[in-house]
Image (cartoon, rainbow, N blue to C red):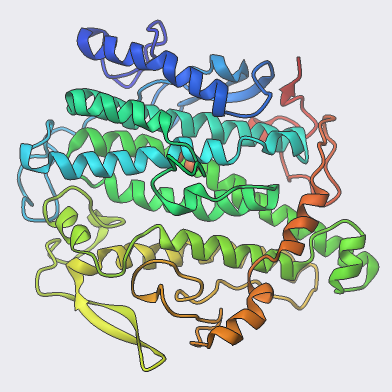
Length: 475
Ligand SMILES: [Fe+2]
Ligand SMILES: [Fe+2]
């Protein structure tokens, strides 16, 4: 069951050939997907041979195989983690009942919405990142970008499989619509706001893969708890791919910081102007990028109070992060949780029924997790002997959803006036000047083992290959 059949047109470990109707429907979607990849996937890359990993089995040990492939020939397919025998629902109103192998009619609409919303983010990020290959800082980084892109494409496959298999005609229509919406398109945008933002430069890319792919991790972890077993199994496998995306982000930012610190020590300066003249990204600019990506990403968890979140949990569609490791009753009725609110110009904590606060619970778990990497970035700065610390801004900073939407908050959590915000905005978020400067550094470096001036080489290569390995062969 866990071995993947690559002799099929669509590689899979779900015995696709035994379900002719489904197989035909997916084989009809496949050329549309490839056309989308051609139109909206990595710009000008169709003929490159890229050193990519491809899943050969969903076992934790040997799932990846590395080799040079042209991206349009990547074997996108359908891979589910093995079924757990007699899996039981372990939270919500159905706790203790058998997990569902099919969708109960009354939950169809909500599950469809959850799957479509998740599915929509996957091709969106490929679209957001499609021009980055033209300005890659090295072959190693170019390869990592493409790896992330093909795997986000595969995540779309994962969601489209569920739509086709379990939602009939509606599902097939949703599958088409996932290829029709486009990131940033004024008429037909992607569903969530952060996925309509541009990823214009590589610092943004690394921040995105660190912060926003981590949102993906938390959403997938919550869905991996689902009572709908096929959704749980497919998201579990997606999570193994997601780990690499966050590695790309964390190590990418770390290498940018490392290089900046080197130059700070060489020139014995912390003056942003001098550092910029030397072609590296000053630490305050890195902080502003961090503030932007962190705040935009935590909006993705949704409104602080949400009756949908309560419904999704109680009906067993979506659990909490690490639901199985928690020791409460897994039903949460009569329990409370603190969310932030604004009263008389002050942030206050307000207790609300925990079921309604589950977006906030997931957001808080995310925040804890994302602080870890920021502390590791600080270690790099510390090791260089530089007295500067990156910090994660206050949860209420620069928020655009829920109770905090209408209020201006400084990174330290002070509620401030519109005029104070306006006067400081460019100290806290990337200014046009910052973005233009970072953009000015972006030039294409593709000689094996060479790196752009603004980023340090990685400590080691991919799959134990040397750093100067030929990760991408250009046609
Ligand atoms: Fe993904
Ligand atoms: Fe990802």
